[in-house]
Length: 201
Image 1 (cartoon, rainbow, N blue to C red):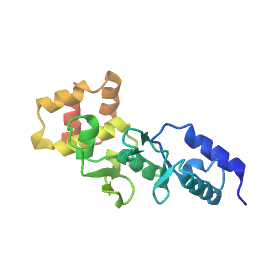
Image 2 (image 1 turned 90 degrees about the vertical axis):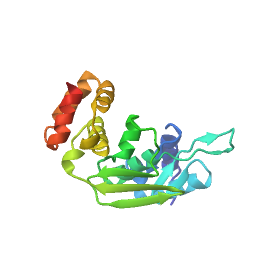
Image 3 (image 1 turned 60 degrees about the vertical axis):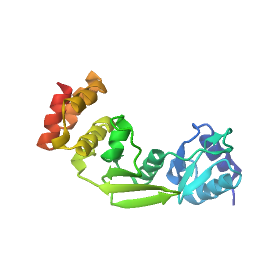
Image 4 (image 1 turned 120 degrees about the vertical axis):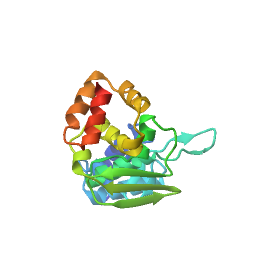
């Protein structure tokens, strides 16, 4: 039997969120049982409150009145929703990390993430999102900023590291972030931890 109370609670959670927010079924687990959540989300898709991006992934979409169409969903938002759904810790991988930190302005053709989960690949439209299993010490129990910087350093590579990159990283970090970064990278490889010490000097 369909429960209108559950419908209103789920709808309220969605519509009081920021446009562009991406949801997974488990985001509503505190409201109702899974079968009911699926029914409510299906109805909200039908009435165009939300849109289904892929199986189990939904967006409260942004509408562009000038173009008369919905804005494409954020690949990073989808990746975070997938990770939340499966209980993975993720961080943008190498080139994607450089893009997110502003070190590179090139938008990745494929959005790749380091993950403590299994290798997975997802596609929607012309966008591909990949998750690559990586060493837990480089992502688990690290601050998001520390994990992101480790991946960016790997993208640049030891041989390409120079004073310009060191200064770019140093300038983007607060004193507290530098202290956290030094602590977080004590168990990283020798060249990563050594480069971090230069960045935080």
